Image (cartoon, rainbow, N blue to C red; front, side, top):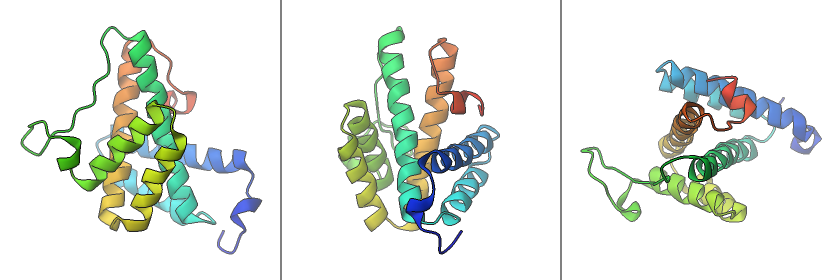
Length: 169
């Protein structure tokens, strides 16, 4: 696909490609293969006409889906949704003391939950422009883990989960 104008791919085709890659990554993660999950996402992004745009869109899609599930859990669940950040020893830490990928993930999800899509995009763009490859991988893993955990929780409470996620988990 190299040399292809990224704008020439129909949005529905791009969305399908990204949901397929994310679905395969979620299935790998469910099987305990975090590295395999990242490999699937990386392969899909690298094969894209514009890997930067696809990486951004894939992460934004995951955070958007997480936001929807957080909203479902908040309104349809018996317990409120609370976001906490923990260090390696299991101690809660303020967001500003968390590792950079975790801070970015929390800020991106919070922006989405509050309807600030532009703020979420800005967080991802900053990460794409400044983060080291291992930090971007950690951010993607965080988005995938939250998607998996939130979908599990929504399904256990008989709350809606996007079809493409339900079909892969």
